[in-house]
Length: 296
Ligand SMILES: [Fe+2]
Image (cartoon, rainbow, N blue to C red; front, side):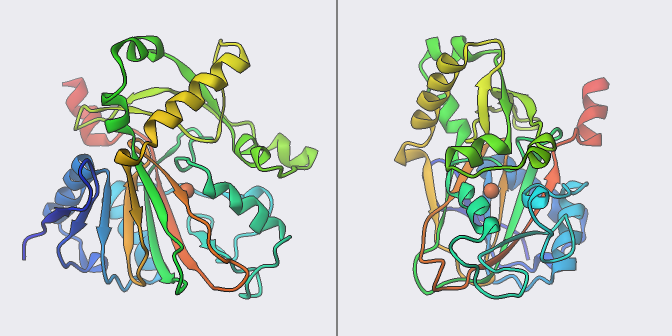
């Protein structure tokens, strides 16, 4: 059966035809999924029955090495016991819904700001794969914004202004925006990373705005001017015509390209309903086939 994608939004996001990802091992199908990622930047796979180990193994087959501890490892132990498996849930170590003032919950609220995964690390995150195990009976959606469309629609003078700029990303910055406080020891482990503001996605060659609430400043610019420009760019990039809202169903597995998109979780009554998803993110390191092609 051949894998096809149906567009869910005018500029990006594809929904895959029925397929069982845990059983995908052949290079031809994996290449089709990578090509789908290059075209759509977000792919939705429905009805996936995937155990944690299968999700980790599939991510490695699709895109290589996994990111270890992209999120809250500095403030708490991973509930799932594997740093490559991010616990995107409102559950505490005991498996029960966290209290409103739970520090891990407070930290996780930062995911409601527009961001791209692990941009505060070097290497950053490339593909993230989020699998829905338990979803609330109320809306608890994730929004995605297409950063390639955002770049394409910038005025020529803005494209010229931002060409070659680099920005500093820090998870401490995005958490402090919401009033989260780190200890001195925690802060010392959160140095952040510097990345280009405009990226070219290998294979597709498309250019993309690399934005995130983790961005603390533009390198070599005065902080206020840099932050103002980043806010303007974010406002431009997240206009509704660039945004897709994913309404989760149990079994959905959504893969997005962190180089080409931003995302944010939308609020819901997290003191009442359980929401449990697992995320695996790959390392944004050069792919061997592309390095070989560039060198030839
Ligand atoms: Fe995220």
